[in-house]
Image 1: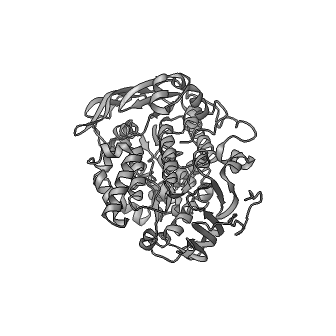
Image 2: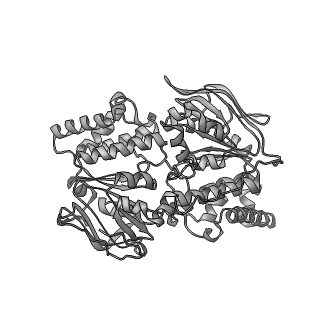
Image 3: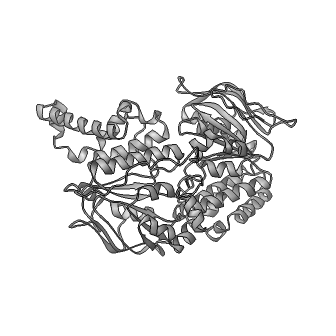
Length: 552
């Protein structure tokens, strides 16, 4: 089974060996809205009881491939207009999603889409509707609890209160309740800490060893190639490389593009700096003994740290450590149960979200919160609302003053777009952009509000090594040009350690370390709680060694 060195290998990937594949995609063509071609002659296969990795940049067509296989393509405005998909020799490309599930193909979508208001047990019960009978459901439930003991312990807890890692376990477990022959996993490591990623990888191996074939779409190429036997690389909707996973991992192109360990270490993405004269809106942020409780659950306990004006301060920790809760307190989404948050002379502790935003505090979200049907320009202009002074009547009749103000806002938006290399995309609809571009649009929209403090929630989640380097350069340019303060929540250790001036580490809602990146790297509590390994392992994940760059 050769590795194809050339690109644009239209339909040339064909199964090798005597046995028929369990799942086979032949010369597949897919379009969206009748005109946008997403897949061009894609051929790939999954051996019976095999694990197949599908790699590629954001926008390459990986999720489209899974949608086509699972029968959900039409619900996303897409359609198969050529080729076939066969399960055990039978065509399924025209089947409904329910029929595909009945045939034994189940998908775990990106984003841990659990039913947050239902208990763990109820989520599994929903997944069990695809099982053959009560005995099969009971056996499947025991299998899930054996693979994920924490779910048994929390079976009566609402899924929305689980950590990100536990929600991912539940999403996988819910799919396993249907007894799949083929399990489709779309970015199962997205937004997870390295220790949890290792556990997910072990579970994928265990699932496969019990007889389930797995198709794994992943940006974490190091993990995907480690657990897979066969791998395919998608580029612009076509298969560009394929072959045994171990052989692909050794190729120069894959190592450089997806593992970040090509022919030498990359140069630092940005020159480190510290703002020496921040603008008047950039102030010190002080978090003083903040605690947050949800009923009997303590999400944060007496957390304190300080963000210097113009610095980049990283907030890291395992899934469920309280990082997003802390960002929600800083932005006014949650109220602190006890403690205090100050931004300069202003007390943010009891302020509403819009009043905090008016003080110059903006944020991005792990899950994109853009308007996909609107253009990039319109999405960015929304962030200018707090600077708009013209009333509705003046804007409607287009007075001279309203025209001048509109021109000023357009100019401000274009400056930010140029800073983040988005100026050529201003008139594109957001929903048509690749994921990596949409993440930069989210960052740009936050910056268009002219913040003094920017809260970034996992800006490189779901990006490969090259894309995360691009985001690192973008954030470095923002800090260099604008001199604002940034609080960053992120699991990619190479990314964090390359940008941060200071790092605060949380575990189970409590602060366990606070210091420079060099100090945090050596802290034994961080190694135990966050990485679950030795200092050598941390060196690999932060780019200090020869490992794959540490994207979690």
